Length: 167
Image (cartoon, rainbow, N blue to C red):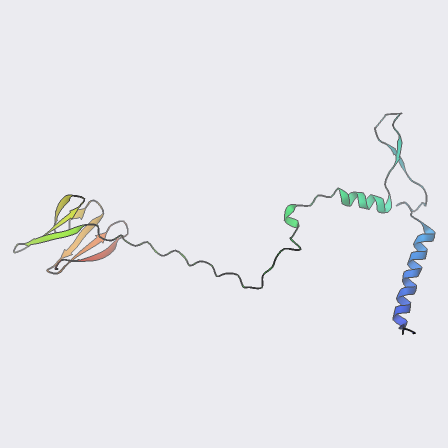
């Protein structure tokens, strides 16, 4: 059975054979172009008894330089690492703005005069009597009081809260 061979395939084979033949016939040359001349160096400077060693030339010199090259760990990528076709997860949402904690005082009752309203609050076994404009423990300021609600401001965040007074 005869296989068809294209002219391009024959040309590539001829070029490869020519390069191989030229390399085999010419042999390795030093960088100066002198074939067969190998510079000789001593292993230890000034030591007459040290054996003579041929210095690497041409391809051997380039291979020796490659052997001693320094590459950073960052340059190397994981060629066989696992990859995923899934899109990356969305970034986490930004943190929400801080809010005032729940009003930690319990309303016990109120007392109304003609011009003022006093509110009785309790927290941690302590009783407070507050009016509009008072500050509780440097944390809450009583802004206003009416018949059904009390408006306080949480001072660290300047956030207002409304507390129901009637039950």
